[in-house]
Image (cartoon, rainbow, N blue to C red; front, side):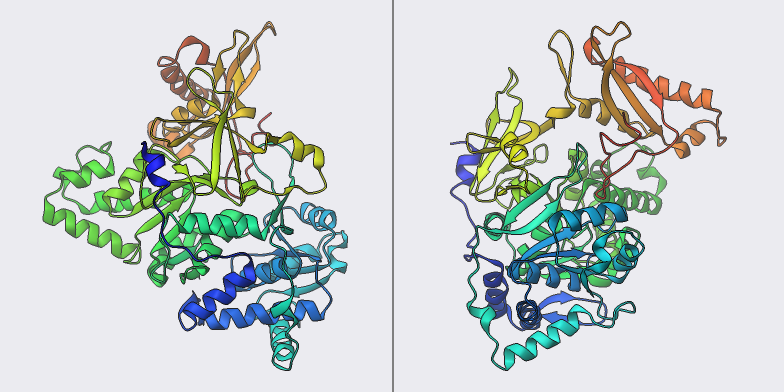
Length: 568
């Protein structure tokens, strides 16, 4: 048997969860007085969380919002998650990205036909400046101390709790169909236009149970919520997974405050994207090297894990203790997804005594499909297919690379009001992810690129832009880059072009501290590309370079939009 077959026989015990009401009620019964949320001004127990959720659900029923679409928008907060859960239980929650343009937000609210809008003051103030119909929808703030709206969801919770305690207990007995749409998410990824992803409570709950069966979650888990909560990655794994098993959640004040908040809340786990881990590691690496005697730091290129291994045991112990203290003292686990991460980043955190699990999934899969776990881990791969999910490779080439397809109870119901788009991503009961990947002989999944990004030459050669982009980004002179296919000069083939936004700090440093002119910058970038081309077969070489003056357009998860305004 290979590793994957052994993995299928290993599971942590997991309680059955069929819908969100069972999740919240069951956790309140099991973990009642334990902290579900540690906020700056108070601690909210599981019992109190359940009462707030029940009160808001009861209020929504009394107000006639059963089966209605309810938009939720704002920064990560307790008010957001309570609103989301109540909306998704009584009707359909429509989580919206607060960073979107006002017109886009209004269009999504209109497309979903939302009857109620719940948001933080900043988002509601932003929407009030728009010209759409959003300002005419019944609206409540999710801020406890709102200065914008006289009535907030916390007033609704109070009203609903009073109704419940005086006999209006319809919520406890109302039927919840776990297979109906209860969450509608509009995606705005790096490729193509936004689509409305329809998810059921069954989609999300089965994903929670699958993850809990392979990554142990219990009351010792305390997460610092950093990533945008409107994404399923954060709302499902960073919130509902923990809340299903007695974990605790605190909220980050923003990316620039991660270090401060880690010391303040002492989290044991963080759900992250590679960009955040790279930032954390750069800060840690710089601090460690600055504090060591010069004889240990003579090689600035030595990877952090090798540097730590080279230190005497006592000195290494002192360094590790200092690092752990700077991270709050209790950080043990990092769960990373949403983009590829370099194995050396994971190896460095391992050396610091912090385990990193890489995973892979999409909004359409609620979200996880594969992941490293408590039983088996491979830092080169995104992991093993999770319990309850079958993954296959569609039409693999000679190297075993093909489109990743998946089926299971976590696969979306379809795209909202778009049967053609839904049919286009389904094949024999499998969801076509649009990602390219392969399995190794042990059953670990590797992501090799995106189908839509593949550059195919006239002679049938496939070029994966991500490979060249990774090589470019390894050079300190390159801040951001996109590799695309463009017609050759005689228009009879496809050639490779790199669009590069340079790192001006590194450019200046290599130019003696002075900012060079445009011609000099172009020459320095050209040298970088030539160095990469020397290591590439002829068909993969970059034949055209464009030096960008501005950063690329990005999504809210900081991924470059491959079809953004400054890419094509």
